[in-house]
Image 1 (tube, rainbow, N blue to C red):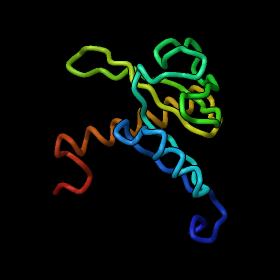
Image 2 (tube, rainbow, N blue to C red; image 1 turned 135 degrees about the horizontal axis):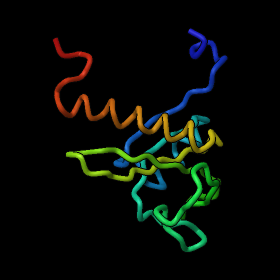
Image 3 (cartoon, rainbow, N blue to C red; image 1 turned 90 degrees about the horizontal axis):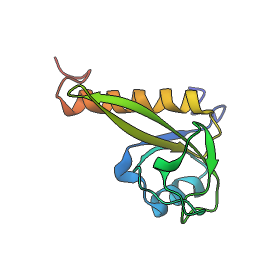
Length: 121
């Protein structure tokens, strides 16, 4: 109810299929905040890639975006093999919290992909 009354700001959560510059700019231009999964090789304006970041919660400018984005990552284990996944947001949520939000998002997605989502009876 608070969201409908405008007391809380809307935040869109999206997976890496929605990491295009056009999509992110469209979301931000509508006054929404975003948390989105991104590829490890996404380029930054300073020439680095996401995978080159060493500090969770770094504020960086991805190529094509004028706004600084907070970036973090999590390690997910698929078939007992670690896989690093990156997540970024226009909000400075801090590295630990942003990683937690991203991890929750990927776990939820995985449940639905496996057909074991909360809607299954």
